[in-house]
Length: 376
Image (tube, rainbow, N blue to C red; front, side, top):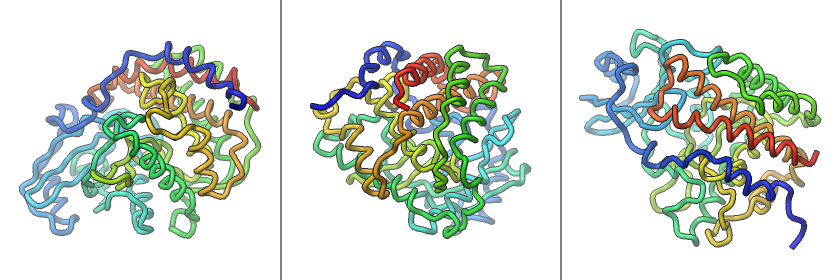
């Protein structure tokens, strides 16, 4: 049977920390009328579309996707096609956040390599069109899975869906950034150290969101236990999880990877460990698998999932896995802390941002519990 990993003994306490479960499928699926604060001149957008999108033909109908916490996202319907618009939110924002120009650039570069991303049509940095910078891309047909246990997939099909996710992130990490025009998309080397500093600073600097004792402890712990830098630099997604993908309607295939706002050049192992957080988190916090009977569900174990990624990328293992898990939990908590700050400032883009912000305290507690059990 082997020795039980220390983190597994945390499952029951972590489930107890869970916030009341939110029906993410209902909360995030579909569209709604554009909120008053996020409306814009649709006629001006139609003019821009006519000038920049091949084969565009009106009339144009605009609605707002329910999901998304950071960059407001809209569905653009025409008689012949549907598109998606991502824009920087209006109002006060933190420096460096909501960089839709970076999302556009990385998607254009990866799309040219045949990587599964929506086709992008154009970036507009003229704030006179919709009020903030934006870009437009194709709407990819398929389905988004909001729960990590893939509830609508039969047990015999779940392993294939997990393998598709695994293969897709391994493919992303296979690209030489310079060879695909992204050699200057971020700094080479020192990624984890910089990220720890960045998210610690962002957490400490968002005064409207307040402070959290576990987050304060994590800032100190992460700084004291930094692993040696391996110097590997690849394009990383930064928020790779099942609900940031579009799956084929009929096959275990990733049709498109979405939401590239946090992408940069960085440590691919850190990016993959972020994806593996699904194994550590209970279902009440985001899309977790902790506490579920994975064999009965047809889902590979964390150990097998990590091994598959290592095989695909030619790695013997991920020695800093525990540290990277703590860091990524902290980073996610810092992102939720930012949502709490946007609520306080009045510019949170999602209708359920307040519900999501409730995850901050249990998520920070979870990260600290993992730090106390980490094998370094």
